[in-house]
Length: 298
Ligand code: C2E
Ligand code: MG
Ligand code: MG
Image (cartoon, rainbow, N blue to C red):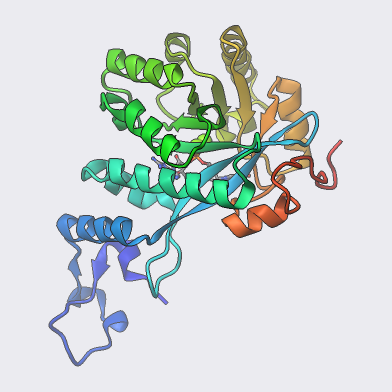
């Protein structure tokens, strides 16, 4: 059935004799930006946003280094929505901070409860670059960590590529504050957005995530291979780890290792999982992070 919300239209409420979901397009009116914002606001408040967790794995050993929280919207009666549409809505409508802290709070609570507090399993949470201009970001994250008694060294904030960083100086300070609080900082999605080599040189990041599109391009493009090599060189100079994203096959894992990425993430290793499925996937024991490697792994 057509999901009207996905095309930005919803049934006209004052057409009582018609089945709402079968209205012809001509009888629908656009959902206003204010209505979409109000829905998202309510969803954040009422807990309709849930997290999936995708494992991040050491490519040499198969040990699970951590998990990345990826938000989903479970609106009642609708199919689960992926973040691409509503993250930009949150960013454009002033809801990205409450959304981010809802995701962070849930992730800290679920990982503590299901995986355990005294494990070294890392947790990564995505942060919009827009939030880097919030002078209180690092303090608010530290408060959330304290509330859940979660060691800051276990948390990585992944700065996404959804926007350019408007105020580089302020972003630099925010990253310094995060690092001062022992929180790790990843630069997400190298190769599909605004990240440039000069930005890599500028920021004190502890992890670099190379996008699926750039990893895939290295197969055929010498230029892509050189970009990755240079990025890895900068990461190494900073003591940062390098993650290859979007690994969908044993060949992709092999290629990522050859490029010099020590960590990997992708459907070949595991798709994003619910908290419960993650615990099962981990073998039920948060402290035993070595799990059976997928077939085809060498
Ligand atoms: P991301 O942070 O780069 O997350 C990785 C995305 O790649 C996820 O999509 C994941 O499901 C997908 N993925 C993982 N392995 C594979 C693979 O092998 N092949 C392919 N084709 N895709 C793979 P998802 O969950 O739809 O998230 C999309 C983006 O939305 C994220 O990209 C991130 O930028 C953003 N996002 C997700 N959760 C949050 C959040 O809580 N806050 C913010 N600000 N952004 C978020
Ligand atoms: Mg990410
Ligand atoms: Mg990414």
